[in-house]
Image (cartoon, rainbow, N blue to C red):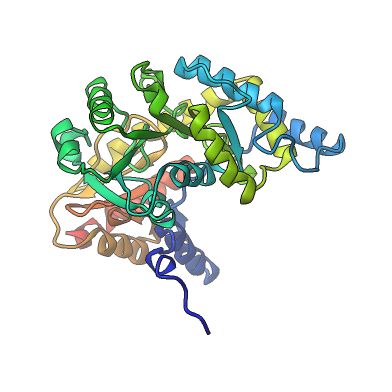
Length: 392
């Protein structure tokens, strides 16, 4: 039998999915597992969005979407969102591609930008799929590791140290999965300076942009006029509108780039599901109070999780500025994050994702989602508190 390609052998299963699978196995055996490894809102999709999808299906919107890059009402709704939220004006007919999920949007962006051997700067902690997708398109992921002690701040001198003549792209995720960190004005200036110095593209992953806390809105790099023509925005409805299973994302950027990405899209996904696109129109143009209600709930849970983890001996949790993840660490331990995550799973039946999955090598961090029922969060923290001495 032929063996898999060398490229395929470099790709590993998502650590998040691996921990979720382990949790499901324990649950199937009858254990009372609390799964906090996933990145999925615990809310149902708002009713007006569901109704729009049902109506579209009943109206016969079940054929291929036309055009394949997205139905015109959705392209226009995304363009309006970008102008409203990012102060970015784009042509809906040429500068946006709708995709079945944000992962494919990221894949198309990298595929259109990266030649084999090109380097992609990825600040860590990072979303687990960034390095794998970079490798899948033939690129070389270059990790720029930041520290919780420095509030995960990106510094220009550090970015320059990791930049070479093969560097082509930097990926920025704000608010960040897994830390919740939102880039500051100083970091925005550093990223813009680096991009202009080295003629880099910036992929701005804004999937959590509406889930921000303490009254501080997320700022998009695409809103900066000096670099707007080199920023590719990746976004979708999964997190803010509780639509993970609907698989609807998009990318937006300069027309010349989007024509290349569109070619790859037409030869792979063809198009996102038509009725899902109609649901996304309802999400973006309909009432937004549902988003605010979910955001407020996450903020309340954030307050609880930060205080609770900081109240456990030998654990600390920095403030969380957005998204719905806590990323606490064991302060004094000789154990790796993977060892800590497995002890927490085996001893307390609480599932988190080890920090090394997010590119963190220095400390024993664990990511826990707080997009879960409040009572389960409280129970999970108490279980971890009860076995904290085993983590040291």
